[in-house]
Image 1 (cartoon, rainbow, N blue to C red):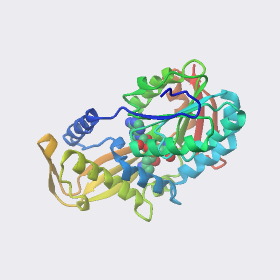
Image 2 (cartoon, protein in one colour):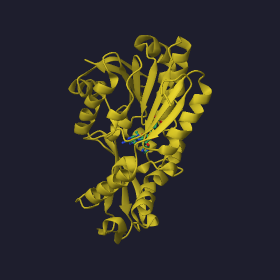
Image 3 (cartoon, rainbow, N blue to C red):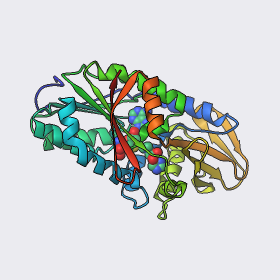
Image 4 (tube, rainbow, N blue to C red):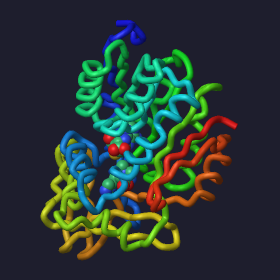
Length: 328
Ligand code: SAH
Ligand code: AVI
């Protein structure tokens, strides 16, 4: 099917047996380090994606509603300034906020194509079907892919492109790889494209910590879900009940760390790797960092990646920022 045929919907998957390999490599690498670690992308199987959606509705998780309000205030301006005809959304998830942008582009009469990109197959399929139904005449080309490895598999631009990378997901990269990743986006944007980057801002640590330690325990379930993923995909025998959720704001690095703490000493076997790993009592394994930004850090990261900030949009309380940027 021609991916730019009006109203067409197509989803391609670039994740296959190789990607179990990525999980296997990440688990081998991460569980044999002095501070054990698993990369956050493995949190998002179908259940992990549902749990993340539930997080977005939590009163403590101010990020989603604040980012949505910023988009609502500025979407028309963004559509007019970029002249974008297509949205290529990285880590699209359930794409609830994306509607605000698609509506603005539809109203401007430019909307031609939506390209959601996510490792979570269930969300890409759901969003592709839903949006193809909702937006008359817009084609959808979904990609089940790893944005760290598969950017060259994106389709060629069909005109000025807007690349939303929302939700603060850029904060899940450590600083060095964050800048490398932003640089790699330059090629995706092309000469007349724009990046729309959502970032959480540095603020009172208590507010940030509450967002990752919600009172209903949904974030804890989300964090623990990675153990279910490793058990299922790699035949491991993590006792999920013997780990607890930990999240704290590292004031020096200005990022949240999510960890899983072993409540008792234990040995875990990972069948697919023929690996046995010991956890001491109270030993912690890092499962996510989530960096918080200042305007200066944003400008610095973008400049180091060969990009320039066109406009930084924020909310009245300066909780969250949405940056419009382009290749310098
Ligand atoms: N953009 C949405 C979802 C944010 S959650 C929002 O703002 O609410 C982060 C999303 O990025 C998840 O859907 C997850 O599956 C996806 N993701 C994480 N790492 C990824 C990777 N390496 N490649 C592609 N998608 C990834
Ligand atoms: C997607 N990502 C930016 C979320 C965040 O806030 O770092 C994931 C998340 N982790 C715990 N709660 C939400």
